[in-house]
Image (cartoon, rainbow, N blue to C red):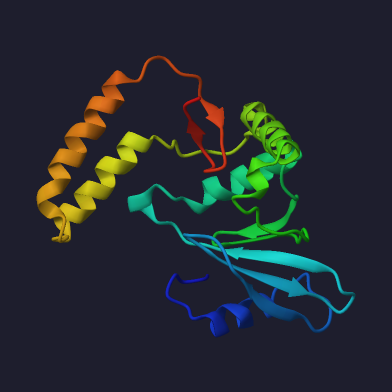
Length: 190
């Protein structure tokens, strides 16, 4: 089982021993992911995959079973590639060649239309969820982060109770909402 402290070389060795591969593979780090590591894997037939490595980070509400369930649900509604394989800390999907949007890209009407359509498709896909999901609530996240800062003697420790108070006020002010499937693998307000 993968451990959160494994260096890249050990992760690459683990990935290279992954049963579905046939022959030699090339493994390269893939930049991105705030709470996980990803690698591109190219097999001897030049087929490219992404291996996403992540561990539970309970203080942040990140549970890999929920992440992988979200990956499966998002692929069912057509907004992500289908996962081929997953285990507790690793998921394998097809690599999609593309790029990152720039601030200028998202000012283009055509790009805005595509992004909006994709988000609507994702938000409307709650019926595709079949796994246990964690619930994302921004005010809870803010309070949890403040508690971590207080407990760890953050240099901002004195300001964190006020952050918690404001998060509580905002939480109380939110009117009724509709839970939807979102990019952060849970439900959020619309």
